[in-house]
Length: 282
Image 1 (tube, rainbow, N blue to C red):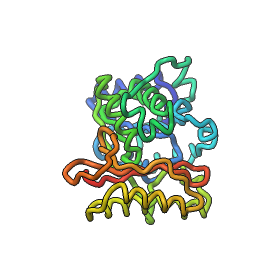
Image 2 (image 1 turned 45 degrees about the horizontal axis):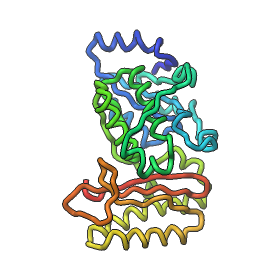
Image 3 (image 1 turned 120 degrees about the vertical axis):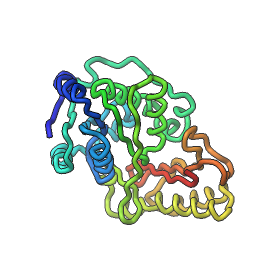
Image 4 (image 1 turned 135 degrees about the horizontal axis):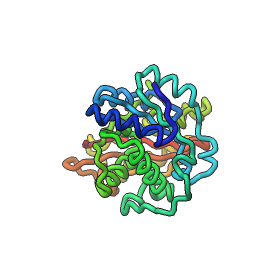
């Protein structure tokens, strides 16, 4: 496994693989890797000839400076995991390598920008769009791999690829969960023991809401019950719990068993903000 830190280092390697007609797979991450990330890596290794993983904690997608400052950084452990998994290259750039000058460009993803994560984290998707565009231009992969846990981010990146005509395909990999159902997230390692227990309310609420919907219960009544459950959970503070179309991300006021739908949730557990989602009708 080779660690590269700049586009200039990568260019001759990319050209060599292109000349050998190798398919290049790319897994962009912010590090603090867990089994969910490694699922993306394994998928890339199985589907492409060369796998590149980036580790870059992107400052422009954090609307909360404290969240950025406390984001876990475990580079040595990450590199060990990636080497063991059989990754070919790790792109480990500095902030200056990604942002050599101040970025003045602003992305507006339209309706996706103003609901759910876009509503509660203003500027977040602009930061995501800029860094993913930069990484796509630098690495020039044939296939990029993303996790389903960040459902709205997936929608943003699909729109980015389509609207800017990036010559690559996207592979979306299902959410990896802990044995008790909690969606794997780098932020989980910041949870204290009691917070970790109470964080299960996200998964449990998704499961219950999905089950209730499929047995014919009213969505607004279900959501009210979930809101009460969060209010009774001392360390939890619910931001949203919405039934949405998984492509437009528009919220439903009632459940349509004949249309696509997913449930999305975001909540603080103590000081840690977690998100999750679950398809109801894929």
